[in-house]
Amino acid sequence: MHMPAHPVLQYRWAVRDSRDGKVLVHYGLRNPPQHQETVLPVRDALAEALAGLDGATSLDSLPETVRESEDFLRLVSQGIVVDQKDQRRPSTADHKQTCTRCVADDHLLPGLEFDARGVCAFCQCYAQAEQMGASAGPRNVVDDATLRSIAKGNKDSRFDVMVLCTGGKDSTYLLWYLAKKLGLRVLAASWNMPYTNDTCRRNIRRALELLPDVELVERTLPANAVRDAMRSQFGQVGMPCLCPTVAHVLFFPLAAAERIPVVMQGVEEVQLAVMSYVMRNLQGGKGPSRPAPPSIREQTLQFLGMAAGAPEPPDPFSLMADYFRYQRSIRSSLDPIYGPLDRFLARARQDESVFVPQFLRLQTNTLYGSWGEATALMQREMDWKMPPGQKGLLHTSCRIEKVKDYCQFLRFRNMRTTAFPQSIVEVGAGVYFGLLSREEGLREVAELGYHREPAVMAELLGDLGMSDDDRHSHGETIYSLCDCGTGRRSGT
Image (cartoon, rainbow, N blue to C red; front, top):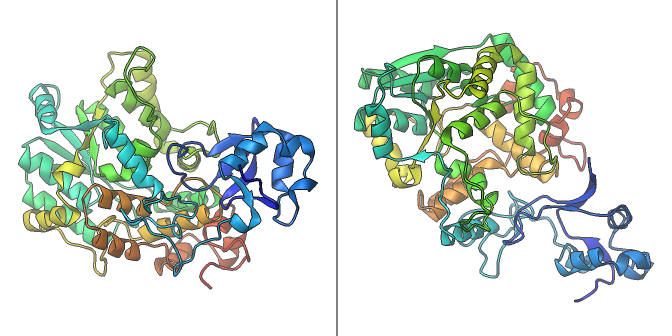
């Protein structure tokens, strides 16, 4: 083992405080099999020494009990503590490494590792899961035969399935597929979120004309309540987003009351790639020591329990920690709308006989063929329109989607969260699973909101009553709207 003469923590590693003591946190994705080893407990003496490593201090200046400890030597052997000359430097837009298999790069995903072939850690996780027989999607992915069987046995409701729809590509495909191709009785449910683009609102109306057996239920929330909640979200979690949680809260109790057996939403399998592959326990195998997966009923109740108000993250630096905070923040801002969901969950947990709709997903990796083919199909069958000026096919319904991209990217780059910027991971997974070519993926990445502050940001901040000073003082916004290194607005 080569001992560093002037030790320093490798790029994107940092000492942090947790409830259980000091930890080393990696803000990136390591190559398998270390991809889940991103939060490492360290003893106080070692943590103090690691926090003081600046690349100028010699190894000999460290206490002997530290530099000769098993824990320190393990960090050296894993390349977490390296010599100053071996510390990686931040990539730039012009000088970066891009995966040879997908389109992920270490500029938009700082801390991303690659193998000797130049394949990124995400693609390695996907390949490893496939080799071990893991499904590409979550356990609640459903096929046509199962959906038809559920519908055939449905005698208690006017509807076989509720679709949470936005008028975007994915939810329009879902409406068409379920209502026209499978002939199911569909209730479309739409939360008319203020920043849904007008094109997608018209797409919903056109879908109802072309699918006259589909019924629509639409809900709004008071404009002041939405504005206050979005402003609060910026301060609490660094992003203004409320979707899709509000739709779950508003419509799931209705599905239960109507005894609709299935609820679905237009979320692609690739949008769950991190949960399905990176976070999955890939040690796998079958046997008595491996716990059986929860039933679909229990999975649904667990999911809704998170939407109803997640607990404090058990690990504040886990990939799921921001999701916990996001759910808790929405609950704190919009608590009055949660009453029906709370009452439903209380009954369902106390009484196994209480009807619980199944929360299921389509096998989009198989059904779509490609994003281009799915879009062309919707244009032909549903007269679906792309929002004016939009080129990317990933997210097509929200006017402030690029705000989410931008804030996620800055929070991750500023090492405020271990949660990866969502859209580039989804595009990379789309390339890996054949939903678009690598060239198409690179064009998609160029359209994402990571590269500069989106033009719609000024309009949004004005709507929310947030001044330029709020960028530097409104809670988490300093990490999602500013360059933390200089205190200046990013991009200026």
